[in-house]
Length: 474
Image (cartoon, rainbow, N blue to C red; front, side):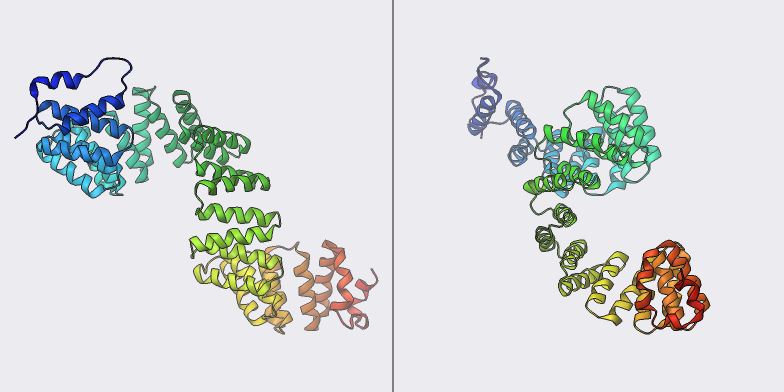
């Protein structure tokens, strides 16, 4: 039995109208009224005020406590169940949120807002087809509901039904030209459709309406970068960071633009800022390692790659990066260990096999080296340099005919690559195909006269073979 004083509730609930009182104080008064006990309409209103306050402040655990009390006060209120469902959704407790919405819909099946909110939670649960059905149900109940239309467009984007999404968004910008959310989503849709110029125009329109949306500045930076307007892209990321300092993704993308421009010291500082907010960000650690490697600070690069591997033992790119640093430091055994680990994780990356082959060559592991080069040309059959290294190594191992085939393939892919022509001449010389060897040498020297300096070393006894006299006299 309630002991709540209904006679005095009105005075207590309205409170002091003094401007000195703020909302925090009012919420405390409402909470005190609830502690004193009571039910009925005024208690429900007090609970709704408290729930709204905590929801706006993003204090969802507190909001849930009072939302649960509200449902106890009004167990047959679809509105109370919807409020609780919305809070559970924001707490990522999607299954419980859906239970609330389902119960609410049985109580009030014609409330379009229930279907919209359930659709949002289904969307968050990656149940896109079901979410789409809910938004369509909301539109049947309320055909002019712009929130349902906007959410439907978002789902259609996720389902890659971009033309349908675009049609809805174009309709919405005509209906609500001053709605920044619609311009934002239209910009994003154009971006997904690779209509970059249109995307940029829409982001600019959104920013005109909502200049402090850091996500819009961030997305605009991405679009500008795709348009190769790198300096303007950096300016957009700076605006996003100015609005929201704790924005690691903006620092990360800004770092990537600097790295692309070759401004590696600036890139390093950006990646460090990213890691200040997210110290276990593997892509940021990896890219910081890459930047250090580019400026030949291999010690710091190795530290970054090692941390990235600690946080993600399957990050083959960081094994590759660390191996490259060891390679540059001529620590070939350590390099090969990292390359082998990377290959275990990712076997279809030709650049990785190429680095592995080079390390094996430097360690004198010639048989393994040949197998690795063979993997490179299988994965990247148009890589003329790999065919050259493969052929030259086969020749060095005594497989002259196989080497000749590989070198010939390299020349077919790039007839201007002097090294392949020169190595082909070496093989032809060993096979005593002197006329063909001379032609290959002539072509090589025409492209790179400096190769003549190697002639005496690589072609033993050449001076006694008449077919080479013309070359020797030049």
